[in-house]
Structure formats: C-alpha cells, structure tokens
Length: 122
Image (cartoon, rainbow, N blue to C red; front, side, top):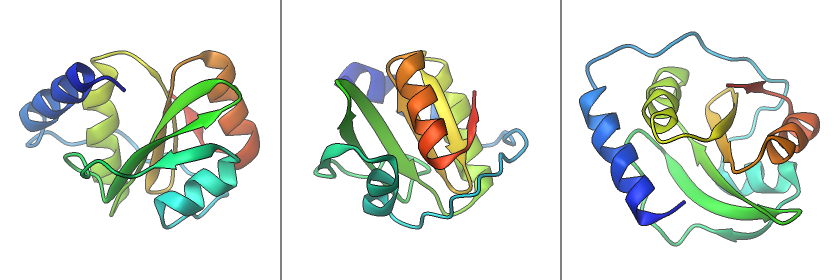
C-alpha cells in the first residue's frame, strides 16, 4: 500500500473513530498473529517493518502469486470493521475474518485468500 493510501486510511479512520462498525464476519480460521495469517494464506516476503496502523494490533504486507497483500490483525471485530470501513474509502478488495483483514490488489488475489483461509469478501 502506498504511503498516500496509508495516510488516507489514517485520516478516514480517525474521522470514523466514533462511529460503530458493521456486522462481524465469521471465518473458520482463527489466526492470532500476522505471521500466522501470512502462513495460513501461503504468502511470501512478509514485511512487518512498519508501525501498526490505527485500530490494528499488527499490520504488514506480503506477496501472493505476484500480488501484494496488506494484512492486519485486530483486538476485536469492532476495530476490524472500523479499519475496513475507513480503508474501503481508498478502494481495495477486502477479505475479512475473525479479528483479521486482508486488502488484496486484485479480485483473483482476494479469491485466493478466501479459498485458503475463508472469510468474507467485502
């Protein structure tokens, strides 16, 4: 994700901080950490070097079959939904599960994530 997109997400997330998120999406996968999420997806080159973003517990990027995925884990589904709602303002295809979200750069990448670990495409 570009620095400008992260800045836009941060600004929108701050504006939405007082609003409630949507309904929680359920997934059969119960990952707890970013590295577990990346491993479950099967992506490579996990980069956790950046600071966690607003609402996230952990965030980073990885590669999956030529696509770049933005990964995030959350303390609860409410903060996950707030992050997804804010991030959607900048575009993207999101796959969400219990306390995690993946922002894919293509529909094919989102479909691949969903096929591997479940979740709901938003």
